[in-house]
Amino acid sequence: MKKNRPVNILLIEDNPGDVRLAQEAFKEGNINVQLDVVMDGLEAIHYLHRDAPYEESNRPDLILLDLNLPKKDGREVLFEIKEDPALRSIPVVVLTTSNAEQDIKHTYDLHVNCYINKPVDFDRFFEIIKQIEEFWLKTAILPSMIP
Image (tube, rainbow, N blue to C red; front, side, top):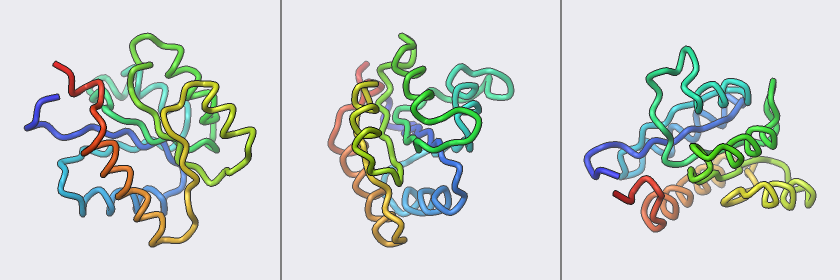
């Protein structure tokens, strides 16, 4: 990954409040982030495959995925990402309100990279986004960072 380009994050989230919080949290960070947002699972798949109107979309360096999405469930989106050789190396962080054991186990069976229970509290949600930034964008080496 070139140091001068932003880190491309795809947020797949249908809750406008959570989208706004994530946008604000990443804006406050000291990492140059290009945050693209899609609001449902079908739109996410179109974005990732660069179908119209996303022909010019950037390949995400990291995907933040809600599980409970309209049109195509987050589990289905995760399955399609991890089954696609062109997409499977993109790290996917599930960020969802579900703390159901079956969801956690199932998403790890589908090769999610990380599962985070999304807090309902504003301050805690903001803190979680900052922790994602700290780990995934400052500590971890993303596949896109390898020349």
